[in-house]
Length: 503
Image (cartoon, rainbow, N blue to C red):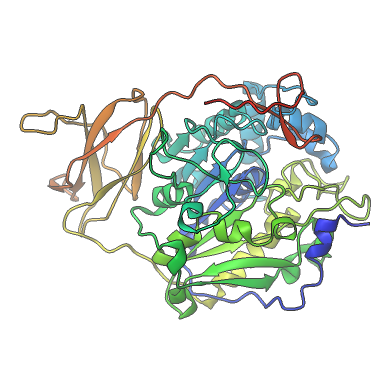
């Protein structure tokens, strides 16, 4: 018999066909939390020629499951290596050899045409998040994800935030906008796995993970208030997109729900050119279990509404009726091979031909079938510089484009004194392309000043942005959280329940 949460999403009588819009497909971006983070990395690697940005909260490197992924049979080994937080599966480190194998797999499948050319990853911008109270996917796993990307993507395009006291959750600013929104306090694990966190000490502004990631990808953006969104959440029928070997597949056999969701800004519905963002929920966040909470509270719709971004929210379904359906009782996306058959190569699920990845790509193609459009930010006479994120040792900057600019050059000074005679030095050896840049190797709890200047084709600098001042965060405390999947609660190293969290 199917799990109760699966029954909720079967046979949706009112689901519509997936609409078509005018989309700027090369600006498509993806994000995910937990199993959704693994899926975002997989999807962004498989379709690297299209995906321009990847955001991963509590996720690990591409093909982390390795050969233990064969038909999903090695899930215990995979959890020990690629989650590391359940004492029942003693942690196994992700070694340099493991990372080398993961890089080799990505390159080999690219060379064989199973994925887009791996060289396309060089143009992606990557945002990684790990909360230091996360005892499900622990920090060494997110560290390994950062290392994996650093082998393929310029490091000034990778931002890694790891100093918030968040637990395992999608960190959202939408909860603060909506009265009575049932999101967790920052250090809480469980419930709908959507948390509200201050960006620093108590009393600091609410951290906006979706806004940080999207502005790293696209440059400075506006945000609509949650109570005044002009767009709509739409349901659609996922069934036509779920196939194997070119033949229709019952969604439950792919551990996917019959119904998926979209957020569609009013301008996109009216036929204006828009961008696309794909947001993957985590385990136990599928609509069959928590309804539309992830769709409406993850924090993306507010930014999508003000910037012509369609958001696709594909949905899994929890399954456990082996061998009729895969064993996936928590509704996770497939990052360990549970949708593969025994005759598939290990890792088939992580390629363009994987059942879930190919289904979502068909959704993307259908959404983009209304025509190709271009969404270009409005050029200005001088760049408007913005801090879009910061950590203890990094600052992520984004700026508006300048008419006629061939590139940009960043200047940095240290200290709060921005008066006459204060010294700022160029920190980019070459002129930059794109909407954002990550400054790395900074000192914790230190104030820096930045400005950006447009550079023309001859190398001559134009007008400067205003100086912008930012202080880096504190180094995260030593923290060693754990979580028992069987007990469904926070535990200590000894696997006994605890209520303790790191401050």
